[in-house]
Length: 511
Image (cartoon, rainbow, N blue to C red; front, side):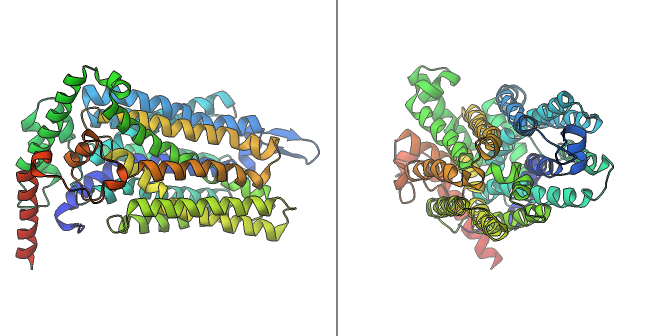
């Protein structure tokens, strides 16, 4: 399917504004990694080591303050569901922005008290949890199907860009010694992103899907016209009809199943399958240990005896941006299933090599080799699972329970991330695995591979109703790519046919 940027540029802008939440997540994850490697931060929060005459961070402090944000994010993801249901997507964006601003201020104002910085990170986590659920939800609902896949993948791309910026900032402020400004400046800059989101809320419309769910058809039409204002010939009738039919089919199914919305996620086999696919996608993205490189990248490089730890972190983030950018550009051209199997397989073998190298004494050359191989993990992840897990999780969470499924998926994401983040320092240092931790993540990566093989299908170019029909008819994911719906099965033949005809006519006129 051709990616028509010109006719969808306003929709892309709305997606980009909503994805500011991704900037918050990426920036926080990386700047905190950087400041943990700063001596000024260690002096403020660490314990004095008489043998070296310096301060160092306790394993418990590193583990708690790094991982506690995922607890906040998990709670934030849960709270997003009722707010989304009652007040809409923009309301969640507002609440998330206020929470991050409050958390950022608490961190900057802290004077070496562990409890205060923990509180600040929990508040930031609440906002990021809200953002992560609702950004993906909103993008999946407003993006035209021609740009839906790349738009959802932009969440990971913008996250990567903010990680690169954060890495550069921490590398620059590390030289501000012995002032606490070296770590307070990166902390304070986080507050700018939610302020941008608050300004963006004046521009973007509410989700038309939310309006349809609330029976507000006129408001849905207005929102669709705003989203598609770049396309002069746009008529919202087709999209309204598709949304109404999809919701009507889902409600009829729920009536027959006799389940309430939340109970249906477990009791109804169709909704349960959606829930498993969406939650599984976010777990598969994180259980392979990728968060280790982002949460502990700087101190990991320092532990290997490499002097240029901040430079290594910066290179990691540059590679990430390039890989995600390439994935977004090729999003509608490279089959997703093939992409995921190949790139995740690359991660598995890279982890094995890292573990093998670490079984011997790690001097400078082996350390450089370990870092180099870790770059393969970074590139493979960010071309495959990084952006595509978000896309798949959002696309399969179809129907009126979409909001609830996405909340559960992001809760699964943050729970998996918290487990990996919390256990990593203990496995690396206290269990004395060191870089042999690669063997552990090779095993968990096998789980990701199994999930991809059995649970990921092709959704490129498919409408929301088509994806919903895949579930209602119980079609195996390996058949999604080539399955053809009959007009009677689909119930929207006239709508899709008319839409495709209009696209063809517009293309001919431009020629």
